[in-house]
Length: 556
Image 1 (tube, rainbow, N blue to C red):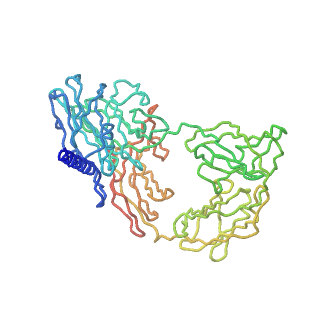
Image 2 (image 1 turned 135 degrees about the vertical axis):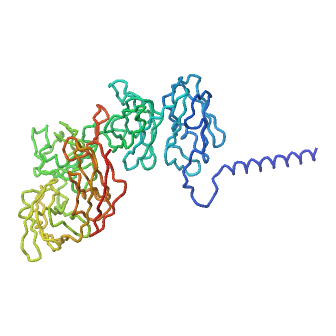
Image 3 (image 1 turned 90 degrees about the horizontal axis):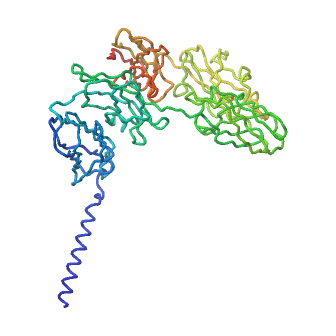
């Protein structure tokens, strides 16, 4: 009996040990380098371009263990198979059981998208993998390639619709063919039959294969694609992604910070250049009294917040309301009229307008000597008309220079200079006692700031030509990657930017069909085509006194 018990204990101990090591082996190894290698497709069955396929399954083998759910959510079959698919895993291989009702004489394209993740470190596939087979003796080889331009293009879906009628609505209709963009935004959509196609790029946030306005970023093609026996490849169907904003701005909240200020919070950023103090007034329904708002400004607030200030004191009342009219967001949506209640605050305003920032055009306190400017931002609003007396600018000979003011809001403005001397020093003087806020506060001081102008040796340049059809209206745009204000534009095929501030630039050429000198991205529904564009493939790193020339851009 004792011997049997001893044997049972030994067997039990061995089983526990085996179970322990089995479980331990499923854990990722400790220490060592972090796995940064993305998973890849090692092999597929059937092989790409297989014809007369009649088996009831397809098989995909990965280079490493992958998250099963991420794979199953990343497999797209075109044309769509409506029946539910069965998935059978064996190690790194996946078998997909197909229904018996595949269409006869039909090319099927299988795409494994870039959302596939490995188990070890959640690395995603760098690019989608696509293969095709046919249930007949001929395989469709129509192919469309291009790039979706976006800050994070990985995972962007390419939705292709075969245009049998002109009633396409991507909000309700799922695509006929699907693929996915890689890390660089490139895609390849293949296995397409002859016909006309409309192809969109969509960041399908809900994975419902529909376009959801205000949720999905999207890109619109410049043309429909027609494939035939003689034209089976269409290249450079490129997109610049955007987000459609259909929501009107709203006032989310109000806080009366003191007796003369209201902090207003919107549901989204609004266009302060199209809004003024005249868009607001305060209504006291108890005393039947209307109070005007004197100033509307950003000040030192968060992204969606602004400040309103007023000189008249509000009477004691249980029913105070802010009336907001004609508030426009950055997409042009307008809030016509809104009433928001106010909780009164009697705390006196004792703070004076404070200079928050002064920003030159370029780094190191530099301003261009042709059409130069300096951006000035104060903490409180004041009368814009007083700037002509409060702000003076002098050269190094103490001679006052010509200047103008461009209003952004009642506390923010540009000082602009039509013409200054190159490589020279200047001084700005602001008499702060003239900048009086709505409560009558000011500071009795003079702010002094020095800046200098650049010279011709500080510039670089870009020159070249665009090869395109004669009927195209070509615009060339050079955009600084790190500073959106540094952008240069010419409406010509033979471009020569000779006053470009150094830095890294993207070069874009587009067909400006409506001649507004802006690139139009189009609309997904109702459909408005975009304007055709091409990015120069290399980022230009421009250095002072070293212009880059002989650039050739082709728009085909």
